[in-house]
Length: 357
Image 1 (cartoon, rainbow, N blue to C red):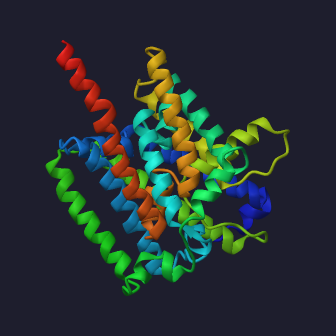
Image 2 (image 1 turned 60 degrees about the vertical axis):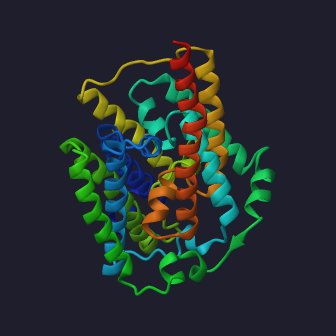
């Protein structure tokens, strides 16, 4: 795709921000309609009642993998310079950060992207949690939590694409990613039909996965045509949430980019979808206990997401779609920690309430 005219008209950073905005609008709308959420899927899986929520996540993940790997195989995308491969990877950060994020998203009743989508539909619990999440993420990058993050991340690191790319690590052929993606889609399709995933769920979940591939493609095309260096990336919400917050708090004139276009785009897309469906309504906290729970969960997600190098979407779907080792380690840690937290916190409380009644 030739972006020369757009780059000359808008400028490079503005074009990057516009792309993030438009892809974010699509993500927000699809995520709102499909109820896409890793926390919901992990809790459903942990409780053994595997159904629509797990199916929704699997459709998103498999579509993201298949489309991204097809772009790579066809030569339309090269992720060798993506952060997941070009930077030094931290397995200690991936495991510890993923676990903290998994605990946090159960306590806050939503992963980072889900909180952003819910806040756009009038959920004040999600709005406060999302703001605290962004503050904690910023504190983990440049603030009081950054030394702790650096210490944990430095415990176990690996470098070089051969060590960070699962396909290369396992010595699989170049087309292996595409075939794995196809297998994911076939298996997911069978499972989703058995789970009776509604048509809106199919469309929404597949749309969320498609936006991940679209993000990879757009930033790669932009990086190849822009004069200034541009990073090849896709959907993630930990760093972008912190960047967007700082953009609001700092004096006007700060540079825009894909990430700072993404967050308001997701908010706008989710709000529009909720309004059109008649689902926009104000919701608040029920009591002080639930408020404390949400705040603790948001802090754990902010720190855990920055430590792991990605949130449930950034690591779990975006990084997973290119078979980054650290992303898959993060994803497994999130699923395990979320299931354990649900067992210890929510199911135990439910049993106590039932016994008391």
